[in-house]
Amino acid sequence: MSRYFYYNVVLVSLLNLMLFVPYMLIQYRYNGAILSMLCAAVVGTTLALLYTRVMRKFPGRGLPEILSLYLPKWLSVPFLLLCAFMWLTAASISMYAFSVLINRFFNPDTSSIIVLVFMALVCLYSATRSTLTVMFVVEVGLMVCAPVILFLLFKAVRSQMLDWDAIRTVGHYWNRMPRIEPFAAALFVFTGYMNFFMFNRLFSPNFRLRHRWILPIFCGLILITTFIVPIGFHGTEGVADYLYVWSVTSDTLIMSYGFIERVIFVFLLLYLMLSLIFATIGWHMAMEMVKACLPKPKTDIDPARTPRSNWVIVGVFAALTVAYGYFFDEKQNLRFTSQWIVARAYGEILSVLFIFALSLFGSGKKKKLVNHETTSTNAAGADGA
Image (cartoon, rainbow, N blue to C red; front, side, top):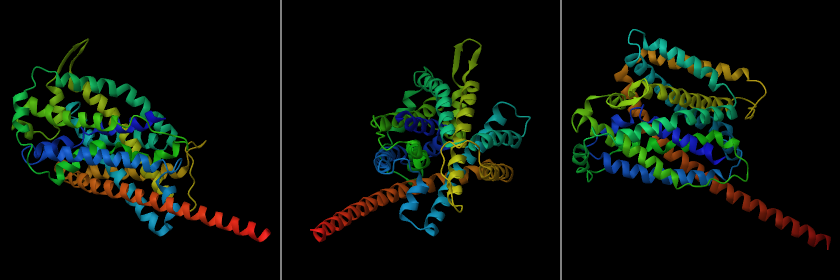
């Protein structure tokens, strides 16, 4: 079962290339991006290890079940709705950004709204499936996409067109103080473990997560590659001219395998699948959190039939996403996404610390309960004697 945890880590770390994480890091390449990435690696690894340790105390329980143990309904509902909004927003902005990319590089004559509608319909169906089915979808999708994407990243690093002098020039600014924007962007690469706010329902009480040392190594390598490769291809100044910098970077690569020559077509098709999987997870988690706020919520990781409430809730998500794509342009989306990434970093840190505090409270509560039961048993035995 450990592989399912790492699937989510790999998915989110790879997906950062298609969001605005590289763009935000490159904008601060002279003003603290390097130290910000280092700080994000330390904080992200610490939060991931702390989170995995804490969630072991709540086997088979998602975030709604954990909150119901310690908080009244009127406190847990706002927190769940806020978390649902964060995951819904993550899925929606990634779908919108990719619909624009598909429109720009594949079919400029088609409106990006039409592409977004078709993507929303696909995710509408997939996000309403059971939690167990969604996890299987993640596994199959990554088994297909991840090896090819990692190969393309390796090919980019080994390319003769990569200018290491430009990378070293930016590296001279390593001593600039970190900033909150690049720190928040870099922290997103390490945030795949947050999906187990809901997927923890799938794990048994005897589950043990092994090889946690992989987290900082893999995510750190992806973060470094995300930052230095575009600089090496486009130069220290030219790299800042592109919004979707990795799409342009992939177009500079050429493959000589079979009928495929331009890497960008393979790159975008692979990331189309990853974007749909990521949106499926985001909508599914937001749906489960909204359902937990309803009266008498039911927890079932693999129901025989899809509940009608799933279609209603995710249908609203799809409508909101399409409306967002209709009323917001690319500049507004960039501004909103940059603000969301910073807000998400604060929310991630506070959420993990909050769950950690609940685990400490729960441990103390259990100890008091055990001591109380022991005292009561001893007293009863003394009375009987």
